Length: 445
Ligand code: AMP
Picture 1: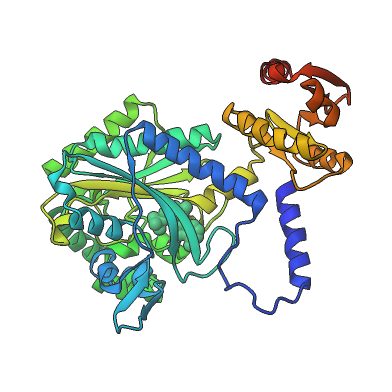
Picture 2: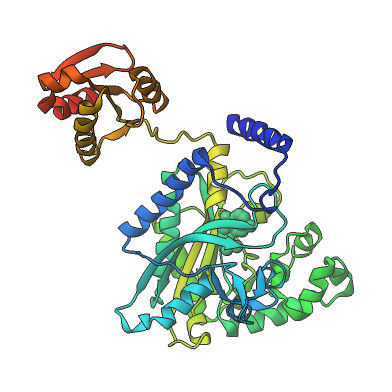
């Protein structure tokens, strides 16, 4: 709550300031305080990904527009309504990356990764651009963290992604639930789409759909399941479930995923209408929702989502390769951490400050500072300042537990002062013993 009030106050202050060149609507600057959350959320994800053997990959922000039109789908909201697409100076139609999967798959194919030993497990973090209606938790530039597994057909791969997501949110102290469904393969979907169209045949029911969905039920019926308009959600009440149309292979795959989740004690909700709105998904689709969410707009609830895309690589010209992946919305996760008032581990832990007085002391301090840094201390300094008072003020600002003070006298005597910043008590120690002494004292703080 406190954070919310602070943010509102800052916003009110910003509103008063007339900025000549303000930032674009829906775009965010990430300032210092916010960056602490950003760092935590991304670095924790990177750490877990590395521990599970995923390797980092980075792709350009700009790709050919066609890449997304052909894969994400021309009828998807992301491509049809939200993509930043333009013609560059060379006459090429390019787009700011609206989602990562097509770009990742392009890289997989272009770098011949199918020639390496499979599976290839990648992690990626970066910005995505969607011209969506901005509001809290929805920006026109947002950041995601994605994990993908290429070349693994086993349901264990789907489960590994869900397990990592679950572990990640648990470590961030966020209570989440997995929403899961299977949309089968092209064959299963064909059968299901006929059933769905039949279900909406009665005029009265079709009349209940929103204007968009009246078109969708003809052109892209699966998207009706994804619509968040209350009238469409209501109309689905008796609709057929896609899992009832799964063939033997898709059914067996889904059953195995659920069995593994049960074994791992990962809470999930079988959500028969979860389809995720993109063209390339096959079999398992899932989203991560916070537990006890009160927001009615489901689009704003999900902290992450993903699924299998077994046909995409071949469709994009590569060798037939099963794959699956998921993305976490970094800003959404930060909002949740703040909403739940979760305290970040203090940056001031083990903080020490090195102050110096006089030219000779400064030279010696440069060397000591490097030793402190290399020794793993959370060390700060203000080498550009001369006055001790100003340096002690800086030490307070970084919440240093101890300040080391090196003056002319200490240089001559080969000693240094250790000042306890809580009590103000200063003691002289042998310069050579300063690091073990500091370690001992910090351990007892
Ligand atoms: P998607 O790529 O649409 O499956 O989104 C994956 C996750 O990214 C979502 O669950 C959200 O947490 C986050 N996300 C998607 N769109 C936005 C957006 N416009 N602004 C902020 N976060 C978003």
